Length: 348
Image (cartoon, rainbow, N blue to C red; front, top):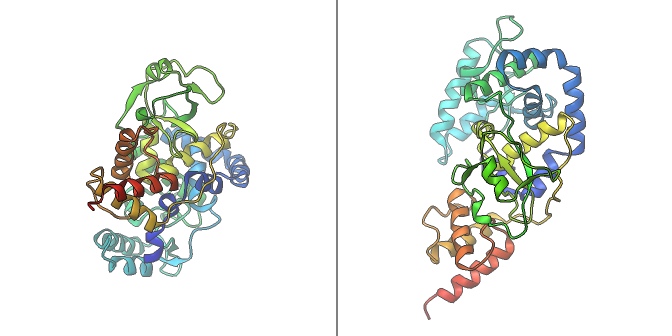
């Protein structure tokens, strides 16, 4: 469990490799089939909670492959182990007590309470604290069975998203096309995509178009630009519902995958811009990159082997000083350049 906690795919893979895996053609086909076979339930949930059915199915698909894989770790044991690991012990200790409360309330049995290595449970992989706050008994049988009942699981997911602030008036965002010589400094490097926010009309004035090369919608809504694979990869304008997805799982790759999978399930097209195929940086390479950026005075945060908002901001600052496209994207070419810069800066 502890080793798995150190290498979550949303943080250790490149965007291209992650996206190909989680928004595969098979997952799209299965999602469309799951949508059709649960249409009546999904329509009722959409009416009751205000969350479009395609998003409920997308979360269902990414979390457990539409209820097919719920995890095999005994939850009490997994949480007990993680509670004694120093990295997030307080968080997992609290989740352990919440898991015991779920058992005490009679929603399931210890034998049936299996889930992910991190203690996430059911068809939508709620942490125990999320279950206690947001799970609902859709079937009305007195138990919240997020393991065996798709109705309980999907209704719980819908209730959670509504409580997180889902806005039924808008979608999550969209793939867009950038004009030539676009200023990459206008893309967000913060995970929450709040550092550069503009109206759709402003983005239109800068030359952005939809993936179908059409003008952006003429609606009064603010959006941020996300470049998960750098300036040469797919580009996305994201809205506030994207940030709601991040409250479920605070990973840029995950949030983009949920939005795109939901669109594909509803019949939307695949990405227009090809996904780059490059190997990810290893944890040691990320540490080397962070160390180099720190030595050069660009990074003041923790050197932890994870490319987060502070590291992306440091990469951007280095790119600006080096007259590179300032997209905040770190790959092996950038690592090599930072290492050379840091080496040249060492006192002789």
